Picture 1 (tube, helix red, strand yellow):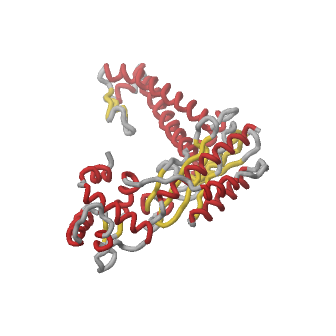
Picture 2: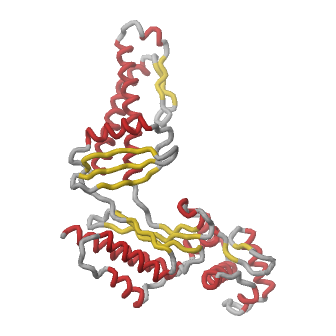
Picture 3: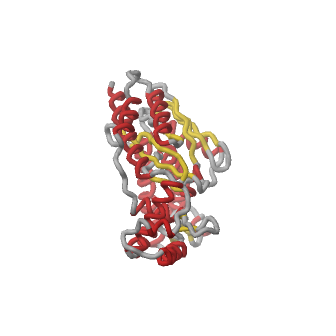
Length: 356
C-alpha cells in the first residue's frame, strides 16, 4: 500500500470529504478553497471552525498548503497524488470530444507520422494542454547498431533496420561508460545482429550471461572446496573470487589454469552485462502513468503534470505513447479517459496499417 493510500484509509469520513472538496474546488477554479465555502457543500452540517481544524490537520499531514495569509487551502503535490490514486472519479469521453478524436483518424494515407501529428494537434485543442506523442518503435530485424556519446550521462543509439528504416533514441548509459567501451559494445552487437530484433538480441545475450555464470560456478567450486579461493559478496554485482596462496598457483598447476580461465570468464561476463544493459536501455518504452510535478524528470517544475497512456500493436506490445502536459490543476477526471481512448484508437489504427 502506498503512503497516500495508507493515509487515506486512516482518515475519518469528515476529513476525507474536506480533503476531496478542497482538491476538487482547486482543480475547478485554481483558487484556494476556504472553510466558509466548504460549509455550504458538506454532507453533514458543521461549523467553519470545525472545518478549519480539519484543514489544519490535513496541512500538518502534508496534504494541503496555505499559499497566502488567507484561510484558503490548496492541495500539495502529495495531496494531488493521493487524490488521483484514491479519490479521482474518472468520467467518460463526451460525444463531442469522441467525434473530434475519431475525425483525426479518417485519413487514408499510410503515413503514420501524419496521423500522429493530427492526433497531437487535436489533443492539444481539446484539452488546452500541450500534447506528447511518441511514435511507434520499429520492430524489424536490425542491420547495424551504433552508440554515440552525447555527454557524461547521455548517449544516442542509432539503429539501422534491415528494411532501410533508421531510428535514433537518446538514453542514459550505465555509469562509467567511455566512448571506447561503447564502440566495443557496438562491435560485439553488430557481430550478432544479422536477422535479429532488439528483443532477440537481449534474449541471446541473456543466455550467454547464464552460460558464462554456470562455467564460473563450476570452475570456482573446486578451488573453493580445496581452500585455495573464497567468494566475496557472492551473488551480488560486486562479487569477486579471492584466491589464496597465489604464489603456489604460479608453479604451473592445474589450479593456475583454472584461475586464469575464471578471470577470463569474469571479464567476459562483465562485458556482456554492460552490453545487456545497453540493449535494455535502448529498448525501454514508456509506461502508463499520471506524473504530477517533480515526479516527472522531463517536467520537473512543480507547476506541471503529464497524463500519458501507451498504445499497443496487435501482439499487445507497447510501441508508443500519447499524452497531455498541462498545469497540476488539470481536469484529470476528463483528460484521463480522453488520453486513454485516443491511445487505444491509435493502437488499433497503427496495427491495421501495419497489416496493409
